[in-house]
Image (cartoon, rainbow, N blue to C red; front, side):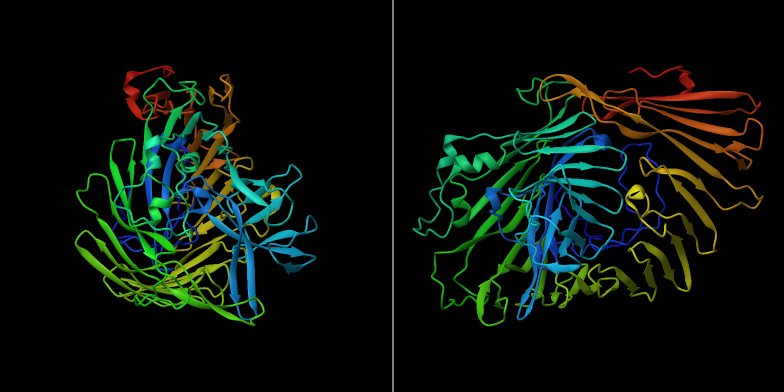
Length: 634
């Protein structure tokens, strides 16, 4: 749930795979390394911010949906009256990366529940301001990882295509200006699995028949603040407006299997899992005054508590009064503690300082002091205390002066938001001094050193360690027609130079063949995969049962047991092993696997394994091949 593993918050992921179902094909293991510079105390040492995520409710397992909330800054976010960052709340915005002296750089930043990407705005090959009021003739250019693309299409939506071919779809604003990008409304994966987000009706749905239903509820008791709150006349913080708060922050989020019940609009009769959110009375004003508490009760009944304290912005980091500020006027609520479910006390605890910085105008003609977000000074994880040395400037070095796994991070001064160097408890990381900011070397304290090399698009092509290496190659071009697989390797080579070759299914981007190096007997093993489009069957919002948009699923896997494959046929008689996958479920659950091959007497036989699920998508039964079933029950 909320706890961050203590021993692996800064690490390298080689081959991160998100599987759609239990029969998903394993991708090649050569993938760009990803480093998370968040220590076990939940502090992001890239920016000195507390970063937490809480899983609240889920349904359907791999084919379903899950919900989470997160906080990625110390400050309580009041943007649009939303009390937390909802997993599915994504949008486009203008982000200023540089605004110092004569340097100015702004970008269009888009995000969804998996990634964030920055794009500059170009007109006739020249960069223009991201907030330019031009209605046509511009394009978006990825800043950093150029495998990303952003395009405003004739249908009025904006489409963000990622390196793996996943497409996130955004609403347009009132105008067609570059910055007129609204909320995230859809994410479509290469195989066709699709998630739709509808904030107007308050639901998130998948084309596998699952939904998250946001239930908004106003209680008259929410109008009143706790009597212990200070009664201050300041107008610099929001007023008490619980009705508006209840319109943006759900009381419940319920996970539903719409293949089983028609209740996207009306009240559900089945006992579907749901999460509950309990805010203090008098929101949003109350959280800006004194101490506050948010309770989140997950689907299993576990209660997580988030504790906030409001900091007076009239005081600097040393506690002195800022000359141009008035006490008891402006406040910043900050997360000071978290008590995870099943814990008896606040397991995570934080204290902060008010940090300020000197900034110049766009033309560098004037300077003023402005407050930035508070930065963590100390943290506690149970009884373990950690401390941080953080510069007053936003881009200053963040130093972990305690004993956390992430020791120090030096951001780039030339490219805000990128990293120059990081020191972990077990080694150091050096980064490429470009906007794509790829990891160059990982030097361990033991003396081992890993060196990473990339192609021009940013795909990892070589990892060298102690004089040996693994490598790979990718297609030289990446046109629109191959976006689902052009950033996947055509071959990879191990430390001995043995190559494994890959081809891909064009429609889904999934693996179509894997050809392994020859074994000691000269046999080259080849696996061939087959796919078919399948459709879930479930209730839509209007109450009618519908077939969802098709999804490419693996239906068969073929290989030769003892001989070579020639033109997709085994050299040996009765040598082919065929594994087939069945999805006889309204939700496209994997309901059966058959394996057809020759037995010890060279007679072709078929063995079948069947799987059973409850209405929540949990596997509750498995019938083994010895039952000799001819088909699996639906």
